[in-house]
Length: 432
Image 1 (cartoon, rainbow, N blue to C red):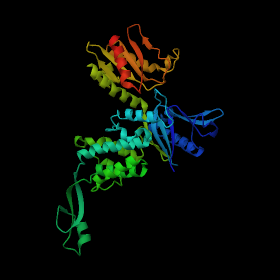
Image 2: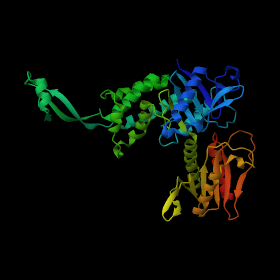
Image 3: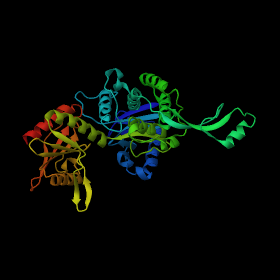
């Protein structure tokens, strides 16, 4: 039987029953399984940084603990336990027991990622605030599938080998003689037929059938049944690796790209991060750094368009060194104001502290990066955008200025009210 544990970023998970009221609790067997999965995944060459984000530790009197930092999503343990990790977001009225507001906000943020987009997911009738992250991800996949089916599944010329009552295509002599020595009226031949049963469609059908088994949402189940009717002439893939190698990646198949990326996750047990999960568990984990960056970029473009300003995302205009060109600079956002000024904005999903002596927790390398942006883009104003952590917390301005005129200011972005928050930022930029 599946069990679900919902936790927020930085929340501590323990297997000590005496601390159920203070920490998130997992039964000891499931906790050991989680620890084993973290260790196994961290040992993989491309997952060496996993321990930085799922931290194992020990607390005196409590025992071993695990906390999640900067990654959110779902971990599915082999025993059936699911651990849902939600982002830590400051909310006006606090959070209810089942985190419906956070879940809905996270879903909206998730859509800003180009590789994980959804269509019309804001529809209130979907009641996404009642879904787990696992069901939200399935819902997003099905919405993307709807978008594809509206345009129509693609067919392709496929090689067929069949014992026919007439000669068609190329006669396969050896097989023909083996099968038809007593049936001269038949021909075993190879020919090409224009058909829906191409590898891409086989993989999509296999994914729908798999999601049909794992989804517990009546809405998702109904949608899957409806979509499967479009795949009646398609065989479900049984050799995923082979079919993925035969996928066509060109402009004609653009509508398939997002769906196939998701299918690879669901069919292979891979993660959206570099963590593949090993044999003990599967993970769908999203780096909040990327989610926050994409979310702010999407909303900033909307706000700047209203103000008549141009904004570039991940601008590629400069290198740290010009001869030869090395170490490309990629500021998250570059705003071109009407008066000729440029403003650089970089996003960091970071919990800032109130300690000025500790630089509020801002890393030295981040400031080196900001300074390089200012010099190369010939601007004296750079902003570091971080999420607002708590309602009512001190919001004293954080600002740093060098003798040569470079100024770096920190803006705390209110994720729940991001449009209003970014409009206030633009007002500050106007008047600075």
